[in-house]
Image (cartoon, rainbow, N blue to C red; front, side, top):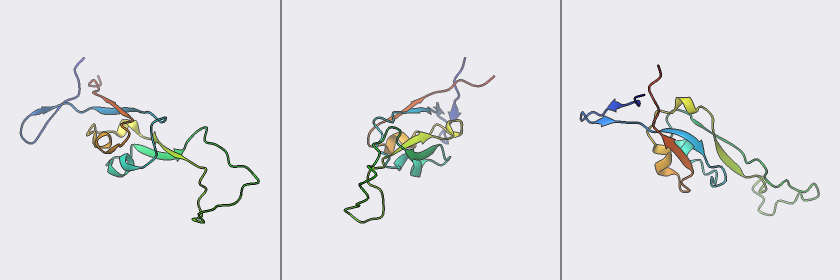
Length: 106
């Protein structure tokens, strides 16, 4: 089966590599991939298994109004909308995105 390919403005053949997964254990939820993605492929969600705040601990010592016990992580929202530009992988400081070329659909 042949892979999806394109032609650059210069006439060179180019094979896009589409996002297939996010390693959420490595992701720090910085949102860089979300900001650079032109197709809304990502979504910022609350990390599963995050430590729950104690009910008695309502004290927020930095007084910024945010719960410091909540950690966020990126999730694939619309993976099929990925155009294979790999901009997300270039800006990810933790290198937690996986990409691969895709076959041409029949």
